[in-house]
Every structure is written in structure tokens, then in C-alpha cells.
Image (cartoon, rainbow, N blue to C red; front, side):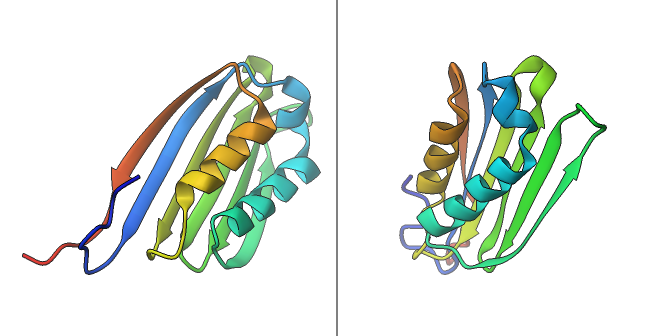
Length: 124
């Protein structure tokens, strides 16, 4: 991800849709929290806080980490084997793609759609 080269403020955003994930991992709150914590380390981001919310007893989960550099989130729909992942970091010392790839490796989807955004500020 080349975003940020020559930028005054570096912001890189990778987000995507994960299809065909195993339902069990998408329901496992403790596992998803661990995955997000590890993803913050992989990104070289500073974890400030982490939270989660379950949508009903068998429903999906949202796991959200606030990192000093921005955020990491996973939203799951176990009944569809579907998850969305969002990793946004500021600073050229972070690697949001590495965090995204780490999460993908743990959720093991059959198909991934990934999108990149350069959210840097350049001098005019």
C-alpha cells in the first residue's frame, strides 16, 4: 500500500468483506478479541482500548479496538459466514495491511474483497 509517500500527515485505510468464514470463529467473542489485539501488534499500533458487542445469544459480534493511531474493527454475521474488517492507521510507522492480512489469516474466508484508501494530507 503506497499511500502516504510525501505526505505531511500519513493515513492508510484498508477494509474489506470476508465471505465463507467458519461460523464458529465468527461467534467466538474471546477469539475475536484476541485476534484484534494481535492485529494491533502486527500493525505496530498502540492498543488503547478494546470493546465488543454481541447481537443476541447466537447473533453476530462487533469487536472494536481503539489504537493511538486510529482503529481496528471486525463485524460478523455467523449465520452467513460473513465478516467485515476495517483497519485505519495514521503514521508511517504502522502497517494496516499487515493487520488486515493477519485477521484474514485467522478468519480463513473462502473469498476476500479488500479496499484501500489513502487518507493522507499532502501539501498543496
